[in-house]
Length: 398
Image 1 (cartoon, one colour):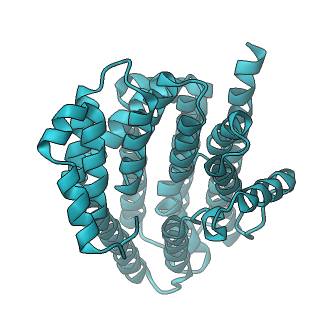
Image 2 (cartoon, helix red, strand yellow):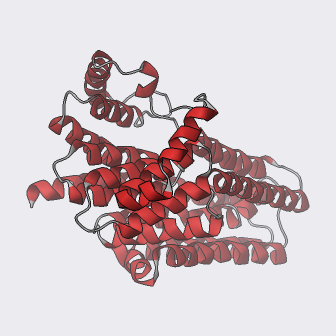
């Protein structure tokens, strides 16, 4: 149903899922009620009905119940909660195509495109003549488009085949394109723009501090607005929603020996950024002829290490102490990052204390900050790709 459905139709549907109907049909009754409430744009009541349905669902509940619950949760923008339900649906019907379609949709919403493609391929293999399976495959493949908007070469033929079959089965062409995640791309672009503006400001240190403060205040405001919008859409408070996402993430990583390694690489890739925007800024200003006094450089070093510490504490809070310890020890990535951060900070303080250091030394130090950040991000991409490759090959080799 769409929003254009008349109020009379909604009234009839709502009357159908009465308390007596729900009591007779158990989980299925609650889920039908939640679907009707979702169409009526009552997200809080719809989420409550889903929670009741899952609470009374037994271990042998039909997979259709969990699939419907996952669809409703996705419509409420609760992708992490839908992931847990999708896994239960797959357990209830390991050979079914509908749980695989749900998993594909959930993984795609979470940005896990390789997993979304793998789930969609399972659905197509089981039910090649089901339109929803072909749509899931086409959308998951199209979600892998790069910044240029083109599909990877290895996916083009498969994507064309999935689209052709879906159209043959009567699918609306508008359903075959996955959302491009404009909000995420826009947020990353805004962050990069702000960082560039900090480095382009060629006046004194005071202006640089003002610009940096305005940038981070704008980012905080943007995050707050996005959280508020998500809260209104889902009907669940930001605090409870964040807690649910964190709990689901911990459970998922604890049960997958590869995912926590990806998390460790991602945490390591973030560590150069606080120093790039603190001591890196000091070095950048110095070679441009706007050197900072020693007290200001010491303040920047302190701020940079506080940023690194907050990143590590944030990982511990998000992933839990047990997983965080494993991440810190993984491949000594974070240890290397901390050593490099200490070296860059020491170099910044040493050149500042020297007072009349040659310009080329400041240029080298600024370039080292930038190279460290770029190299860290590049290595992280390669490592994540290799871990994903091993993760998908592990079941086949086992």
